[in-house]
Length: 158
Image (cartoon, rainbow, N blue to C red; front, side):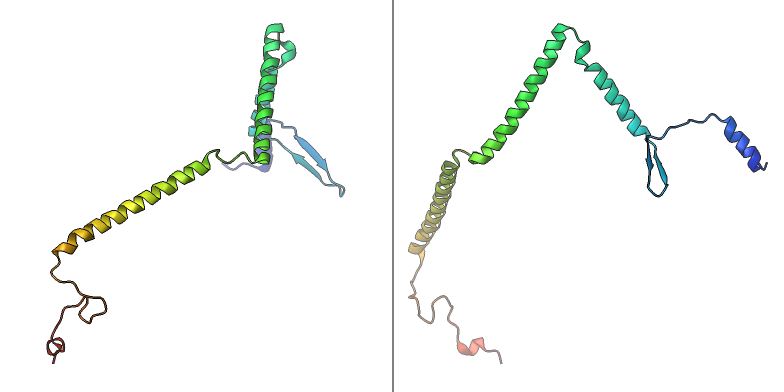
């Protein structure tokens, strides 16, 4: 079934529509008008803000809760202020370095030195154990040092 433009307008009018008012209307110098509408998320955020503001209204509290409310607010504000200023003063006076870092560095340096000494001793002990088992000692700089003697004729293939 085909619907005329006129019938379509009648259908649109019969359906209840939400009339939204613009959140902001901006008038430009050249005569243009821009209307800004709020989204559903913004409306939900506004409702949440209103609900939190209405529950924390100290003017509607009795004396006991009123004093507790202000004591808590003063304490939290004081603590956050001291925390902020303490951090700034620590940076200003150079107190961000660990107090005993030089002791830790010295400990690690000594520990590395001890481990190096132990590894050197292990290596020298192993060499000392092998020295008595050798059959002959070769002097450094001699032609046969570190090589096996071969006949020159055997080494060259023909």
